[in-house]
Image (cartoon, rainbow, N blue to C red; front, side, top):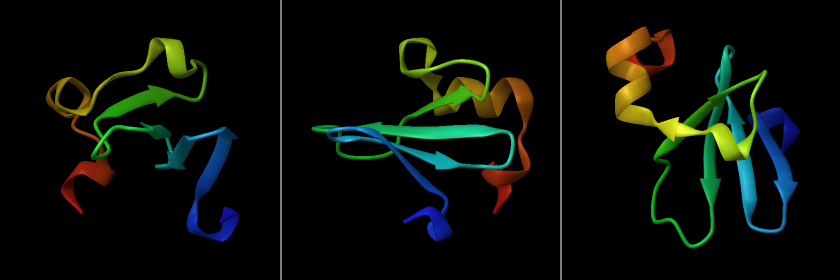
Length: 62
C-alpha cells in the first residue's frame, strides 16, 4: 500500500499522500472528501473543495 501512496492511520482511516499533504478518507465516507497538510492531522482536515479553491494544488488538476 505504501507504494501506492497510502498511509494507514488506524482502523478504517487512510491518508493518500499528494506531495504536499494528504487526501483523507474514513469509513463510512463514500468518497475522498477531505484534505489535511503534513503538519496537521485528522481533526484538522478540511473539505477538498475549499482546499482546491484556496491553494489550487497540482494534484487537483490531474
